Image 1 (cartoon, rainbow, N blue to C red):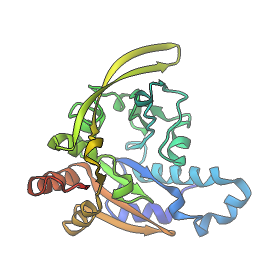
Image 2: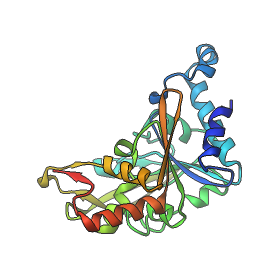
Image 3: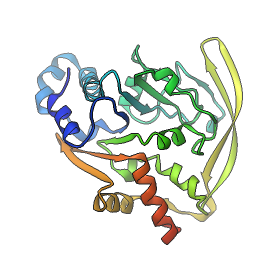
Image 4: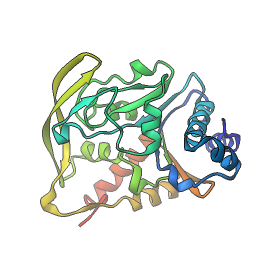
Amino acid sequence: MIIYDLVNLFNENGVNKGDIICVHSDITSFGIPVSLKEQIKKKGINFLMDSYIDTFKAVVGKEGLILMPTFTYSACHGEIFDVENSKSTVGALTEYFRKQKDVKRSQHPIFSFAAWGQDAENFLKFESFDCYGEKSFFGKLYDLNITYVLFGVDIQHGATFVYYSEEKAKVYYRYYKDFLGIIKKEDNQFKTTVRYFVRDLDLKYEDYWYDVEKKALERGFAKIFEYSSGKITITKSQDIDQLIQEELKINKAFLIKI
């Protein structure tokens, strides 16, 4: 079921057919939308998730693309990443989305993505198994200036794309670490080295991205609008990186709190 009120909100805020959207989500923030309450009672929670996915499809159309993170951190834990079966650890909607028959999934053993839409399988290919480098999948999303949609989650708690900007700036509180990635797809299995710009735990800091959201809104680099009981934040990959790079030149600890 398409939620037309939500389609209109996206359109009013500049998201339209043909766009590439990357959706980071926490659907619990929205509760049970009033317009869907009766049908969810009859059909269950999957009806809600189908409705959100149908709505995203209606927004971008067949000529667009929907991406969702399906991160597993498999290589970090010394586990095999099974493209078809390893569960997403970043939200119920992402796990539900990746299992749909018309959705494809990338082969990154830490930061995989699922995609639906125009040439989805080819789009998910990436040049490097580095997690956030310029040749990584995140680098590809930057190059294409895609639209990030934070669906029920704010920048502080959902914007993992900030790590791309940190690696680009070579921030002082992270360093490179290699992990062994073991990737299984159908009957094939292979190994690769995954380079990850990890946090320096000795520095005892926390990510602090509230100022990113504040400044992005002030400069018009992000929009926030309400739906049901939650909020949706929209930003472009190049806009948010530009802001972060500018602020890091002023304050090298802009993104952290010691």
